[in-house]
Image 1: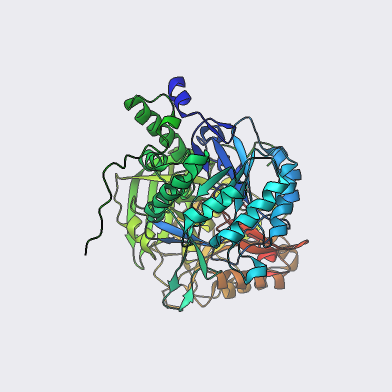
Image 2: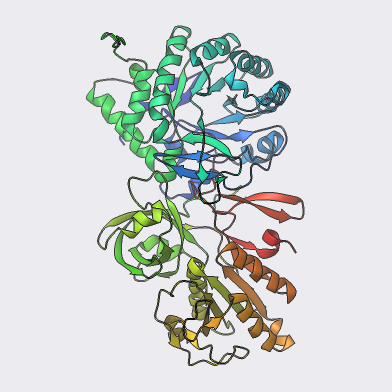
Length: 321
Length: 293
């Protein structure tokens, strides 16, 4: 890619200078160094890397199987295996090369208090931003995911906001009735940005043994299968965000530059790549090149000019039957 | 990961299929041109293959043989699911995207050169790779290979010219390739194949161990790959004779580079249970960590 093309891709996200709109998604790239095993892969090809979901105490995660291929996608139920926030801050962050990309922590908790404490631990670290995974079960509310309820979501955002001055990105779940309402409540509670969407919950069964394939019984569906759902959610959340200047990382099944462009047009400032890496670990350079070529073809000076430019003059068809 | 030694150790290659043979029991032997993978693979390494553009995930396959000079890599796999069934349809001349080599390989201990290699079914490939590696290293390495299968072996067995103490009379079927290398081998099955040991690989392994003098037995290390119950039996046998044992594990896999933790299995450590990734922490583990001491 030429220097000119590179400059087209640079953007500002909550005050963070990203070299590309691509963010590598939490849970797909370990704690930032794993994919550098692959020759030709570079963290410098992406604007940001979201680290693996981190809780206050270490967690072992779920029993196998943890992943399973499904039509045009995959289910995963890792169970937040991680070494705990203090270990991440003290032992892992010092090994990362912050000159290559922006590193974003991804925090989880079983209680509101846990989120707050993990956010505080990362606040006192070189991490560039904090993503809140609000899709965890709330143990004090019968295991309902925080993110499925706008009030519980807002409560988590509020305590994290209190704990840190770093940019806060709230990762919204598609597994709820009204994502736009949830987004509104999270903005009021102080989020700086959104990641839209987390995985859709799903299941697979071994018909011979009549047992669930995943050790955790259920898991999150990702990959191209969820792309249309994710795109609509980004569009809906963008309606809420645009007047507040709140940026979105659009994510869910992006595997090509064309997919990424759809999300940007729908309102995403940055785009997340996760499952696509599993098929093609070198996909990011291709997505960058494809976005840059599109911008040149359309005479745009920066990728930011394309964000939320969906043309909607043609009225949506009304259901008449 | 404090240093950067892990970086650029896995290669993504667009690989031409040089040969793709079907064998009974839905077994297939695949040879691809993959010079960088061939140059860096070690016994126990695996590769992650795009079986078909229609599938969202790759499939991990153990590497059976490599030729670093000629730049090819061989796999033996069984078409058991959608991915491997689609792979089986790919023909000579087509291209596959393959990532590799991946994983922590076997680490034979020079203090124990009598290596007992036990492979079952599609667990045979890494055993063949290890046998070839040890043959190349020469003396004092002395591998003995036991292979088991409940479908016809994907090669024409031939009567061994090498006597192996402890092996019951009439158990003469050997793998030709290993014979040619001068590595003794025997085959086991419960299907009554001619010349094969009628029973489990571990029973044949026990007969071999029993025939060794105690001083020789102390030079033995066990290496195994195959179905989980077979690995467990191999680990039990090793424990019984107080022998070190390394096993190669399988698990469903997504990224294969340590990023997703999708392939993690429970491992026993001094600090208690831990979840380790089969892809980069393994696939080879100390059997005591997997099955207990």
